[in-house]
Length: 317
Image 1 (cartoon, rainbow, N blue to C red):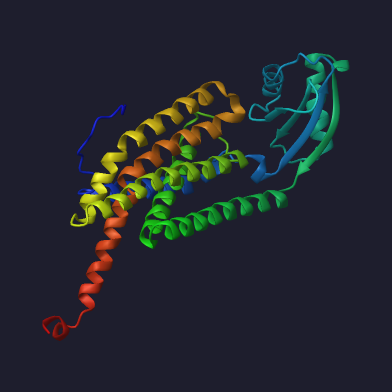
Image 2 (image 1 turned 90 degrees about the vertical axis):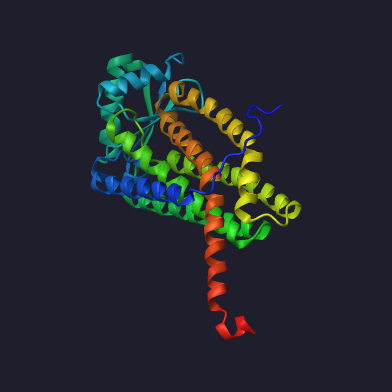
């Protein structure tokens, strides 16, 4: 049984207002990001840093204890992961000095906290800025390739105009999620780091969002066959209303799981979970108000161009 009963909401008449508001938010947000970029919390994936691996002889030493010790050294934003055997940790910090010196400082501080015979250094490496630059380029390339593949998929399965509408909506989702995440980070309300985890979040948002839009597009295609005399705007309105319950319930289900990660996932998952949370909200909004409305706008423009291109004499004849 549907949680949301049958609705008859007009989603497309004020589409120009939705476009204007979204465009204004994205532009204003991007300008704010540009002017405050120096305060952006970039991860060492993009800035370079030091990665060390350590082993605690006492395998019961937990991540919270290690993170607390790192915070007291001034490395509160360090990336900390357990790996291998119990008591082994990978630590990544933004310090770009000599890896040996940085690792020595960290290990000595850990030894003073947990005792000298408890902490052993297993290895230390620098994440060079050159490698960081390659990661940044590869991340952007991954997003671009994802957009292109999705455009081709939607254009092949439906029509080109639907593929274009999906790409516009996906760009809207990623840009707005990026802007909101960066601005939240600048307020200090959350420790959101732009890292490979953030890129993974954006790619996941793309996957969720395109799936959401395919459901609506499928219903539009079905209704265009069933209601041949109905205008495109009316067909789209009907289709969005018919899929509204599924769209809302799916979004709420995913958001509930992400809320748990935001509050209880720890510092490592906080950025990923929050970015995903914002992206799902925006993706749900764009599935209802942006993607299909763009299809109407674009179709109207093509129709007007075709009418305007007919020679007056031909039109009379």
